[in-house]
Length: 178
Image (cartoon, rainbow, N blue to C red):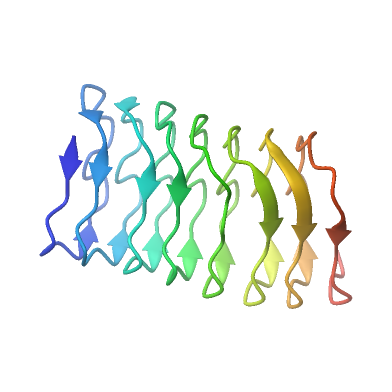
């Protein structure tokens, strides 16, 4: 298991990158503000959910890439402003509903690509102006509605591809140009 102490405010680049033998759960301290790029990439034996504390404002590129055994709920920080490219890419077993915080401004390419067990609806917050390539691609268990925030101007290719269970309404604001 990984227990991040309260005195830590940033988990640095590659901190636990490719630690294939690291198993158990991740517990974040109360003062983490930044999870840098590749921080937990390819920690293939980590299990449980991810409870990102409300102090976290940034999750870096591929921070949790290929952590395919994480099998509990994903709870995001209420103060997140940026989820970078591929942050949760191929976290195949994370569960629960995806709640993007109102503070979120930037979603990176493939941020939630292949988060196949996440359920519910997707609501893009109003501060987001672009939904990039593959951002929510291959989220096989999303079955609700898709609501796109009023400031989104661009939806890039494959943003919502392979969401075969989505059955509700899709609400697209007038600002969307492409």
